[in-house]
Length: 101
Image (cartoon, rainbow, N blue to C red):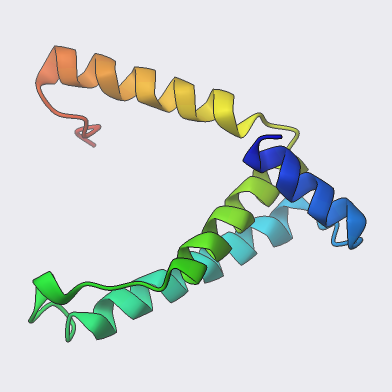
């Protein structure tokens, strides 16, 4: 069972259904918690080699992202493959994965 299906089963089992707008806000909140931990662990950039984030915070963000994908009926694995292909093309064409925007 892949991660997205595991999240969907968990949401179903615990009746945690939510619309995509709520899922997006939850994802933003979880990513914000990661950013806060990184800012604090590095003394707001003064010690970048001290960067640290609790794995459960990464897991919370991953759960939120997979729940969002599921609420949109999007295949997260296919979306990742599409993104990787896009980055490969950019690197081949420009030498960087950045969008240049």
